[in-house]
Length: 171
Image (tube, rainbow, N blue to C red):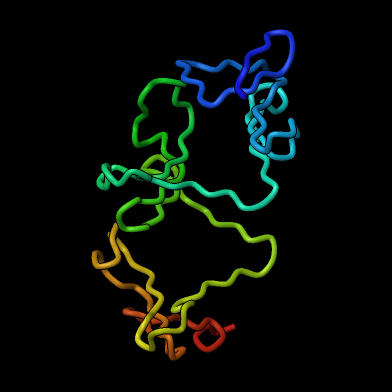
């Protein structure tokens, strides 16, 4: 049975609304028990917090009708309903190619690891010909100039000379 009770809890099948406003200390719970442990809510003054009992999934283009623009982006200083410039994009996963872009033409990208950092190639162990490449002037895996390569066999190759100061410095 579905019912509405403005003075208490309501049980509804489907609610079609244009907008949902939650105050700056409120949250939307998804588990049915009102717990903030599985919710989206306001956090501190201007932040949004997403809590999950388990994994969190984002399905891009779930209806399959927008292949060419189904990207995941994190942008900064873009208003609630306004478009943004490419210089405001901080992180992007291309929905077609899975290419990851960090930063933009206005800022450099930095990856920090507080401990060891591992880069795995051929992580599904189904090929012996894969390699890790460092490239210049490239925005796709096939473009640009290769500066440095490490093959799955462990062989490293630089396209220019490699300087080893211990052997070349006079001191």
